[in-house]
Image (tube, rainbow, N blue to C red; front, side, top):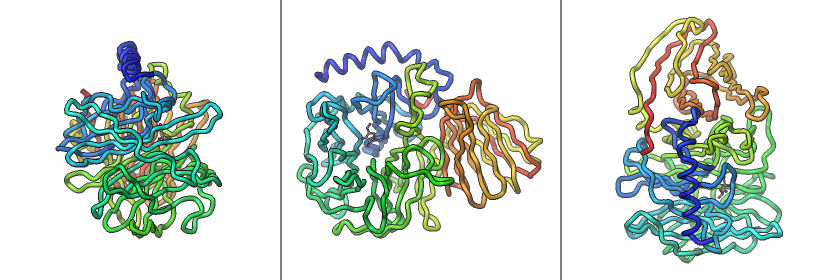
Length: 469
Ligand code: FRU
């Protein structure tokens, strides 16, 4: 269908649906969510001429996956965002089943998108093209078309290019699947973003000492942090373990020594980036002030998406809050971006035995908690966080059937930060040693109660909303 027709249908979908979506009591007040329809991966995250740009996989027509558009927001401060013209519309033959995930770079001063044109055939097979688009003065993007067809030796599952500039070259990591259905991350390089040469397989299932490790590794991202190589990726097809890999698909990272020239990445074990119920397809960028920032999708493909109550209001899913990444003790540490502190209202401080703590408003709030022993916390009478001295257990009613479901973290708990925004809960453990991100759907504005005899210290702030113009 032509771009004009698709945009006309998009306009109708927005005009007809936006007011209803805005009335949803579960709509976040300070997280990014789609005006209508379905949002998934963050795409094209970059800071350019002083503004952050964040695009997103978007089906503006329904709360289902489909031929994806790229929506586009920008912000000067990572907090207050404005809508930009829709970046990509799946109008061309080479992207007819979706402008799939990708990234942004600035080349010759121009904001340039690299994304996957997804093409599906009636027999169920597919192909993919890696494509370019360049921003025009009015904020729309001009497509330059495919620059990379399917690399030989892989199936049609090749997508999600993440590109950056280093050592006088453009580099790309690309998700791929080999004919034996092993997920891989390919490394390619280019002098001009147009001609790409393969450098090698950087990592994957049956690479570098890994055994079977999934049939597809979506959304790779590769960068250096404090001298170490960091590969983020989303392996699909890992079997659940006792207390880990419990989501439908995982999002995690490897740390290692990286040599781009030889496509060599000697890495350690896979670690989950987030232990909550909803987290996938994270993407990072390097900010002008040198921070490695990350947004994730607070959703998981094919995981109870049909049961999200926001569908009744014509929208589904949201982004995580932005996070800052650092390395400490051989692990990634993730903290809420410092800018978020500007959302804080009046501070309430309290200390005493947990069970005597006041009930706290938890609709849109930040809570910091230090405890000297076991305690538990109940949110909206339905979500429980329990610390027994060894294990932190998050319990919520399943979106599918209301039965309790669980996620876990083990360690030595010193401190917790909870970020709440109506239908989301992000838990930062020990100043970012681990994170648990989840959607929650309380029936009324959530309140939070504490139980247990341990002595706790609390800091509580309401968080202001209205961050999307
Ligand atoms: C990850 C993903 C990507 C793909 C996009 C399509 O959630 O499946 O691999 O590019 O979503 O929307």
